[in-house]
Length: 97
Image (cartoon, rainbow, N blue to C red; front, side, top):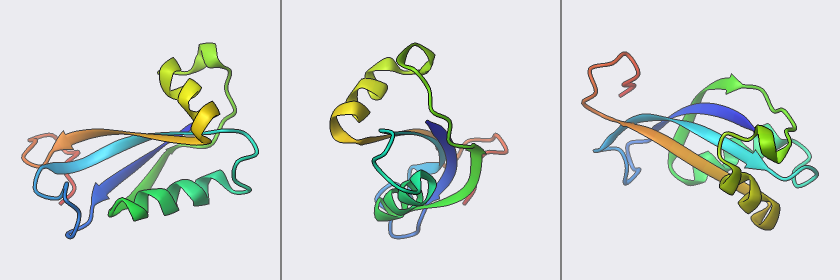
């Protein structure tokens, strides 16, 4: 599990609404040789751009997962990405575009 910070690209359907997001990434151990690279590729496929790595990849147990249901889903689907978005007009410094 690890966390990325990203912003929607201009051609993303989320561009008008989302200023950015923290993305919690759950990848099943052994699924990808380079979990970070796979996650960045996935985010790009969603028309988002990774701008920072908030947490480095760390293998965790289910009881340590912030969201156990996403941990469980990654065991089934190999990978799960949870976008925690903030609005584009947010007054906080998190707005990126």
